[in-house]
Amino acid sequence: MRQAHTVEQVRAAEAALMARLPEGTLMQRAAAGLAVAVSNFLGSTYGARVVLLIGSGDNGGDALYAGARLARRGAQVTAVLLSPKAHQPGLAALESAGGRVLTGGQAHPEEPAHADQAADADQEADADGPAHADEPAHANGSAQVGEVERVVAGADVVVDGIVGIGGRPGLRPEALAVVRLVERYGVPVVAVDTPSGVDVDTGETPEPHVRAALTVTFGTHKVCHLVDPAASACGPVHLVDIGLEVPPAEVRSLQAADVRALYPVPHGESDKYSRGVLGLMVGSTQYPGAAVIATSGALAGPVGMVRYVGPDPVAHAVLAVHPEVVVGEGRVQAWAVGSGTSTGSVDLERFHRITQQQDVPVIVDAGAIAALDHDRAGRVVITPHAGELSQLIGVPRDVIEQRRLHYARQVAEDRQLVVLLKGATTIVAAPDGSVLVNPIASPWLATAGSGDVLAGICGSLLAGGLPEFEAAAVAAYLHAAAGTLAASAGPVTAMSVAHALPEATRLLLA
Image (spheres, rainbow, N blue to C red):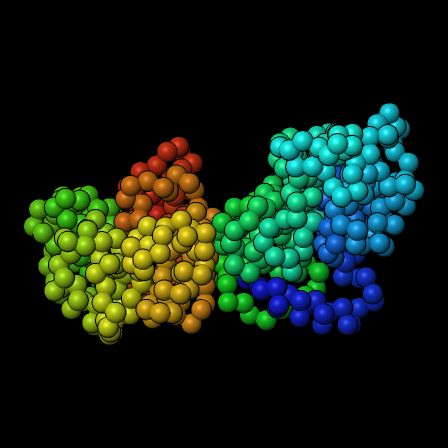
């Protein structure tokens, strides 16, 4: 299980560990891991040109000490100080190792330029930081800006040590100006702990921020590593173990071993009823294919039988592809409702009866989400994308996309149900605030009918006996795994994702 802790939890764990260790030990552990990660990212350290962007926080110290290690291994390391409160011992270590230091873009007075930089030694930058890349320099600042730009433009990698995990979203103007230069020249960024400028505890990005090719974090993952939109700014996240002892986290991510342990595998005494019977009330005369796709997803899961309830023409379409399906109501262990329907095409009488059954869990998808009663008694999972959640709660879609964790949790608590908010990172939120995130999915899954497959496999897992929260998270994991497997051959369709589910499951359980 991958756990993502809050800043408060990380700070408490760090304080407890530092009280037992010699001063500076924790930072040296972090710097050692960071240096190795940067070296691996570069492929070759000797002669590599490394630029450190240094703010006032401890992660600036991590970056400086890591820079010193890289310099001792032959890298050409330049630190650009973006705050007068840079970590002094780290700064001294970098200078001692032969690293170059620029103060706000100005060459450090005690550090001579490297031989290949001597010709530009007079191009010192303004002490208050470079001008914005898109703005003219100060009257006397063009040479200073040119120095910082030259260093950035020639870099093989930039290490982001601007803002630590305690920082607020956004960047100061002098830092933003240098980040814009990095973006202009396309230099890859390795972020220290988190990309500077993101909201660490929520994954929100309301202000300009760094976009990293790799994030190296320490002790434990942070929420922004798992939750979009910040997760997309992190790139791959490499965790360095520094010995932190952290409590259980509310935001977590299932790994293969967790899914394997949860999956309802049949045993020698199983029959089709004990494996679970799923009722499907999906599809419509307008979208009959949704019923076929959702059924395909359900049958690719652990369920022993599927019952289809819906219009006769749709039932005939389902039977033409899946003759093993039983048409008509009967006893079921779970329901999947709504895929391929609009609010107007949902059989409301039957739908409300289904959602009032306290002992039968229901997954509610697509058009049925908006028809869900506040006073329903049943155990419910809803599977909206941001647009459907917007219609449900009256919040603009773009606002939900920017605050995915917040709104998934809010709706789960307010409505006392499980929310599976679909997206590049899928968020599954429980009424008690617990969250399971699936951060890995092929972008090819953004195809018509993909959500119908997800509803089917989730319903199958519910019928197989998994609780709502775990069923939704396992379904998201398997759906993403099947999408990745199907996409290995190129563009996918929803049916190709459904057809890949058995193989994805076999690989998981093998």
